[in-house]
Length: 310
Image (cartoon, rainbow, N blue to C red; front, side):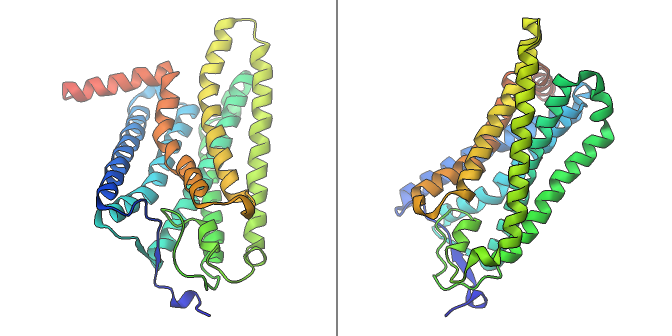
C-alpha cells in the first residue's frame, strides 16, 4: 500500500488533449481572470478612494472583493499554466497550500456573506439602532471573525486531508486541489478520520445558512410593509444583489461538499467547481454595481480620474 509519504505530486484534471484546445482554454481562463481582477480591483479602489463609501456595507463589500480576488487567484493561474505548458502536475506542497488557501477564502466568504445579510437586516429592520449595532468596531470584529473562521476551518481540513494514506493513485479529477477529490484517493475511512473537522464545518455551514434565511425572511417582511414604493425600491436594490450572490455561492458549495457519492460524476463536479470558484469572483462586481447608484457614481468618478491622468 502506498501512503501519503510516497506521493510527491498530483495530476490535475486536463481540460483538453489537443494543443489547440489547451491554448483555447488558456485564452478563456486568461480573459476570465483579467475580468475578475479588473472588476474587483475597481471596487477596491472605489471604496478606498471615495469617502462617501466609507460605510459598513461598503467595508464588507471591500472584504468580499479581496476574498474573490484571492479565491480566483488560488485556482485559475495554476490551471492556466498547466494549459499553456501542456502539463497536469502540481507538487504535493503546492497542492496542500492551494487547498489550504482555497478553503480559507471560501469559508471566509461564506461567513462574510452571512455578516452582510446581518448588515442588511439591521439597516432595514432596525434602522434606528444601525449606528450602535454595526459601528466601526463591530464591523472590524465581524470581518475578523469571518477571516478567522476560514483560517480555522482551513487548518482543520488541510491537516486531516493530507494525513490520510493514499492508495488510489495521484490523479485528481478537478482543475485544482479540492477536498472531495483528494479524499477519493484515500484508502482509509475518511469520515471517521475527519469527524471533528466535519462536525465543525457542518455546524458553521448550517448555522450561517439558517441565519441568512432568517435575516431575509425578516427583511422581506419589513420591505413589503413599507408604505412608500420608493423606499421598497431602494431596499430591494441593496438586498437583491446580495441575495443573488448568496444563492449562487451557497447552493453550489453545499451541493459540492454535501452531495451523496452516488450522484457524483467528473462533469458534474467540474461544473459545480466552476460555479462556486470562478463565476462569483467575475460576477460579484457586476451584480453589486448594476443596481447601486452610489457605487456606479464612484466607479465612473474613479475611471474619469484615470483617463484624465490625475
